[in-house]
Length: 309
Image 1 (cartoon, helix red, strand yellow):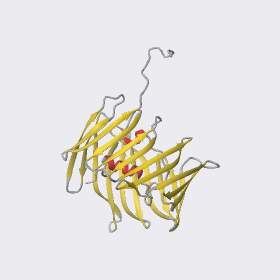
Image 2 (cartoon, helix red, strand yellow):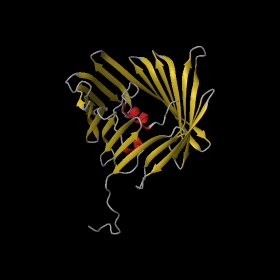
Image 3 (spheres, helix red, strand yellow):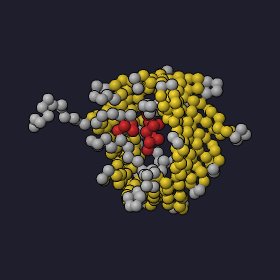
Image 4 (cartoon, one colour):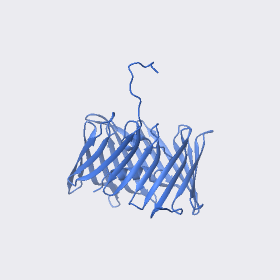
């Protein structure tokens, strides 16, 4: 069963720079399901630890992935003028920096006439790894990336189309369709729903697909996986997950396939901070535990006399 809500899985998706995610992103507190002036969040599970640190503006500045007592990855983020200008990922094995797998990403931003970002990736042992150029249109949409490394040059283009309330972004690598993401709206029993249909292709031929449905609060309602049936020439559902919430907090996930059905219950404990964040997650019936140790920036006490110094 796919653990779509797994905390570490979610975080690995955020930081995994695959061919599907070609845009330079700046992550904030809200991207990690956190609210308030969070200074750091340590996520603890049976299979690893992940530390996230933020500045007072809520922008991610550091992550630490702890695999065991001797092995860890540390990533630092540096900003200037609201832009990400440098990212360093340091890999430690047996408590020793591995220069061959540690790397630095440097970003140069040009906004005339349209936005363009140049990213250079260099290993700590001074080896050139890759260069990426990101090009945007006048509306700020990513429309083209050019990747250069020792194996050659690859060009990825992004076609944006809109018909009424439906938008589609199609990704082509060297002219071959790799992915399409269609975002649309439909009416649900409790208001509008956002539907995101993602299709993946291999050598231009359909392979897999997912459909995500979000409610008006942008919370996931259903998640369905498909594979392409060559004989029937259509996508066939493999499993579908249904998400339930109590007071806007995830409470249950039901996973259905053609022959099976399984349910997971989610129980959360929250801290006393205002606004509050959850600090313990229990998933039954497996009794999987996830703990979050959250530290906050100090905030000034409210005063009855706003002009008092």
